[in-house]
Structure formats: structure tokens, C-alpha cells
Image 1 (cartoon, rainbow over the protein chains, first blue to last red):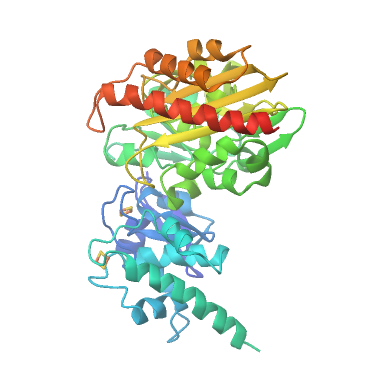
Image 2 (cartoon, rainbow over the protein chains, first blue to last red):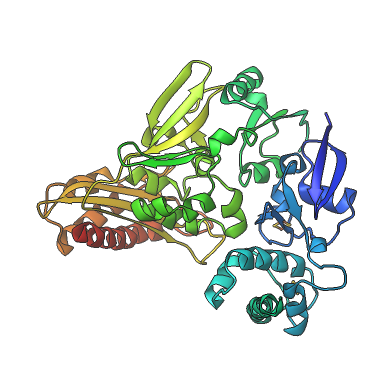
Length: 162
Length: 290
Ligand code: FES
Ligand code: FES
């Protein structure tokens, strides 16, 4: 039996009808065409599918769409403000933290969740927050650099605000 | 996920229990879903009815009083435990274990009670909660009952839950004065790791001697287990290095490890000795300082 639910994604409400076994990741990608969240392992091992639910990093491949109703979902598509990139997106570009890019959305979402809670993370904090995000290309060093850089940029942006 | 017919979102424990009873073996309860989803996706379980308890907010309660101790509701996540000062202060062993489970994304949604109900021999919350003499509060068609955690684990992925029953809380007694505890997990990597061996111990000192000892081990028996002979060796004795070694050796004898792709039974036994000794030493240090 299908269920009609409303998903709140990046501030927009979407009415969808889904079978109970559909994961949030499948609905985001296949129904809402928000393909930024990646389907890597589809079983909780790689972190490519990381999104925020009520501000917390979660794996959308291990979340049923029906379980995500009435929550606030943020995906990589919801980070930029028009043409202005989120500090983490900007930092990933500046620090050359992306190669094939498949892990990048998940890395960035884990980074966003970290910086929300801890605006001045140590390298260790970053490693821990990104601990279940796998990257098969970069060797991680530049990814961690990018998160540290983003924290710095975020502080600068905050300071520049009147 | 073949054959799933219906998703239920009960608003009360009573409703949830009714659904579980009505659909019996065809129903599966889901909370955080970090274990259930993996089972569903791999079709290791194929329920027709999925009963989500996520719309029962009362189940997210995490309460502490000096008299009653800690009560952990079935929707309390590892992150909830880690973020609560009262847990870090009075039950550091629980925070140690919660911080070693999976990684952040799993800690944010996975639940303590779910970890117990999945009943993996390597369940990280098993040993620390056994060491703290936790009880499991259960609701079912026949009413409520409480079981010591030790009796709750029946076999690999098997619990004492009867048809229609669900766990409504894990109860942890208040911490004793001059007590110390420690959880250690032995794995190959820092995160997303399943223990090869884990040890949770808790010691209470009185007049320079060990008044109460608990040694619980994970991943070395069909269920998370207590090393009761080792506990007896310690009880009533002044804590010393020699005694600690004796107890650790006893724990290694008492466990019943198997060989699997993670490591051999022999290795596990050796590591039980090492990790029990280390955990005891750390717990004793805290207990003696208190
Ligand atoms: S796709 Fe979700 S963790 Fe890999
Ligand atoms: S950049 Fe290719 S997987 Fe990370």
C-alpha cells in the first residue's frame, strides 16, 4: 500500500506518494530529481548519501521516506544562496578537495553538520565528523583542509556582517 | 524489500503493542533503523507490516534522578547520550561506548534500545549496560514486565521478547559512590567498526577492597556475557596488579569465542585477557579516586 506524504526539502514542500519501502535517497533522486545526494553503497557504508534531517547528518539510504515526513531535510542543493556558494562549497573548490566528486556532496553535508555545532573544529574533530564518508580518490588530506578552511571563511563572513 | 504491505505509525505504546500482536511474525518494529534497514534491504527480514515507533515522542525520554538512576527510552540515540552532561558525568562508560559505535551519521539516528534488540554478539551497548546491572522494561499484550539485561540476550540476534512485546526503556541503577567503569573496544579502525573483542567493567570500592565487580564482554560468546568467575575473584579483595591479572586470565578462560573472518578464536581469547586487564586498571583508578 502506498502512502501519501509531504517531504520538506530545502524549505520546499513536496507531496509524494510512496511505497513504504522506498528510501529517502531513492525519493530524493528519482522522484524529486535532486540527484546531488549520491547512491554509493546503498547500505550505510560510504556516506555518499548524507543529508541533514533537522540539522543532523544522517544516511538517506538507511532512512525510509515515510520516516522523513514532518522533518526538515537539507540536501546539497539547498546550501547555496542563489549564486553565492556555501562556505564549505567554496572551500572545497579553493582547497582542491574534489577529484571525481562522487563523495563530495556527502562530505560537504557532514562538514555542514559539524560546523553548525562546532565553528572552530580541530583536525581531529573534522576527521571524526567525516569518519563514515569514504573517498576513493583524494586521500582525504585536502578534504580535511577544506573543512578547516570553511570554518575560517565562515568566521570571516560572520565578522564582516554588520 | 519484497512483500511489504503496510507502514504503521502508532501514536502510543498501546497501539504499537496491538499492531505487533495482531501481525505477529509478519510485523517488524523500526526505530532508528540503522540495523533494520540493512536487514530489510538485504531481505534478511521480509515483514509485511513495518511498525514505526518514531511518532511516539514520549519514547525519546532520557531521564536521570539520583534516586532512580537513568532511564533510556527506545528512541534515545547514541548522540543523545553523548550530548547529555548527566550521562557523561555519572555514566561515562555509556558515553564511551556510544561514541565508538558506527560514526556520526549512525550515532545520530541509531538507538541504544535498538542496539540491544538487534542483539548482535558484538553489540557495543551490551557490555557497558551489563556492567551497570541494567534492566529492560518491556510492554506487551500481557502487560509490563522488567528483565535483567543478562536474561534479555538469548542468542545471536535473539532476545527474550515474546510476540507482541516491545522494550519501553532501559533502566540503569544510580551510580554507587567510589565506583569506576570503563569500556574498551578492540577493532582495526577508529570508526565504522565492529568489535573483535570488547570489555565493559565496573568496580565499586569500599574500605580499600572491591565491594562489587562486573566484567562484561562482547563479541566472544553467542551473546554479550558476564565473566562471573572473574568478578568473584575480585570481590572482597584489595585491588592489586596481581589480582587484576588473575581476573583477566579468568575472563579469558570463561569466554566462548569463535573464529570468523574478523579474527580467530585464539586471538579473541588473548585479547579478552588484555582488554579486561586494561579496563579493570582504568576503572580501579577512577573508583579509588572517588
Ligand atoms: S549510499 Fe548511503 S551510505 Fe552509501
Ligand atoms: S573525489 Fe572521488 S570519491 Fe572522493
